[in-house]
Length: 104
Image: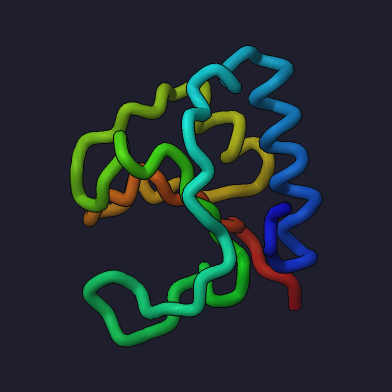
């Protein structure tokens, strides 16, 4: 069971379908969370995990501000489903995917 925002259900379902269809699902080793009320790392504002609008995967291999082990194809399965990837940020968060657009 995954606890998340209702607006995350369709994009997350599509991301998983993309992973299965392309075979990149074999890279998915661990599910490391979605809904978690907390602040952003190194910040005082709330994390998008606080609203169930972000997910973390393969955390043990994709630590915060460290190189990522996720392939470009794996990442594309999420970005094409409507997610932004933390692995592209200045302070890399390779385990993190969050919705690109939020409901009004």
